[in-house]
Length: 126
Image (cartoon, rainbow, N blue to C red; front, side, top):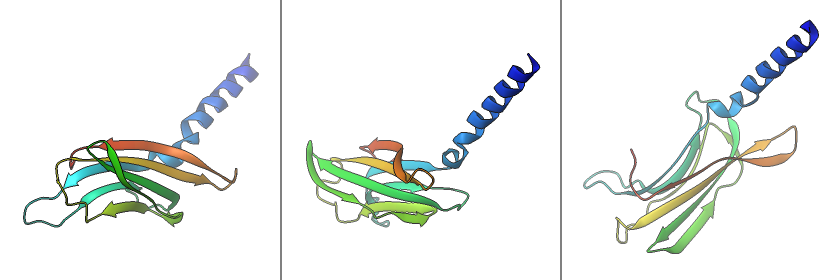
């Protein structure tokens, strides 16, 4: 009984810490960020670690207007605390954009990409 209890405790601890590397990763997409007289932020998708710890990130940001995809951009893999794609020139019909982001990480031990999160927005969600 004691042995199975120890194994269970170890399993719980491993599960608790297995996602720790992604627990600090934040993701967001935002759309239609064109404040009057302010900096043009545009439409973007971002993955970042607020503790400034680097991770292998890749971000795809799809920008659509009126239900039609206008463009999709994917960043390259970067070992950084912050990876994003921002389109500053999406200024046509500023309130009609939708942004869909895919945020990926790279597992060096497994040698493969994994999905961190998918995000979407049709507002400037600051």
